[in-house]
Image (cartoon, rainbow, N blue to C red):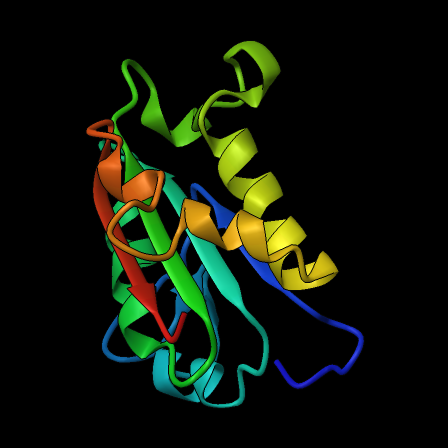
Length: 137
């Protein structure tokens, strides 16, 4: 994750798979999560549903984030949580979270950071975001 063209990462309903300390999927093996995250140089956000099969991976991945800016938001979603909130009008709750994350991290719009930072952070005070964690904000 050292490509200088990459400025930010958003993951929706996703995370890295790991087995026996190494990532694998479909029979392919990759580096460990520790190795995968050691060179991460950009802000990263995880938006995932509460019952999503990817939630454990996203939550675990968040633990490997080092010194870069990071957010983990787990949303209560009725039905198939792996589809996130995309089937809801205007993209549901994931859409404004993503737009604020992009505005803050790519455009430098400081007021967008209030969605994530401080005691009055929007995500921290919305009970449907049942898990909300940040790093290095």
